[in-house]
Length: 334
Image 1 (cartoon, rainbow, N blue to C red):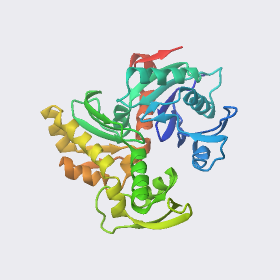
Image 2: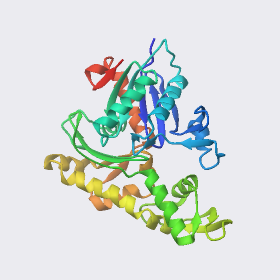
Image 3: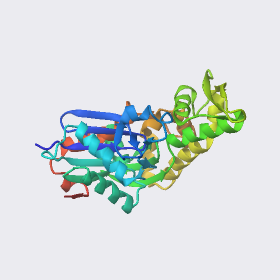
Image 4: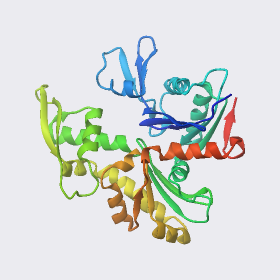
């Protein structure tokens, strides 16, 4: 019997939900490849630990950028391995419900569908991430009420006003957690002439990063390579400095929220004022982001429990609710 799957194929993390079993897989969207043979050496968490630490013939790659496929062949290999990890064989090809950013073009959507089908899925259906996130957060999406969702992912941030089971207005920017990491790397390079890796920037963002002033500001030690001497160097960096470093990408996210509210019907905006904004996605866990959004948009902001899992849980609820996905979602089959 085929196992129906919901896949949140994110730029930073991939999560898989299986009907009646829940989340089976939650790991970074990374593959470690042998450049000489093209073979896959590791995936997920194991491959993530290899970033910046591999010899010349091994490369750790992220096949998606800004929510879109940047390398079709590598993405197909990734999805094939995910399906194998989920217990899928050639005799039990599943129907797959794949979550995609609303900002994707038709060509990019088709690439996701083709990669999923080539990896072994029997049917592929797409659902937009803001809608899935709203369902996963438990919002009354099928009622005539405005529900504003802000989904901050690794490569994209999406703001959508949802009512009666559809997206009324939405604003998407290709800015996310990776842009925050890159901003931190650039700041440290500029201010301290120290080069740090992607993983170090992410660790600093999680430990002391914030979008809003903290009651007690934090400090952290980071280590990297001195650009002047080429030798190892360590510096102390504060949460105020990290906040300054990530100002531009955070401002882009806030601007997208304000623009979405500004282009929405007045009656639905009234609902947003009453019920607030729901913040989801891994980037939504940035300290103080909810407070900053609340201050700038003048609307209360609520961070959903387990924001990283909201999208895949919403897609999973769709799997449980509908036996015939073809009657609900647009997709292709093979």
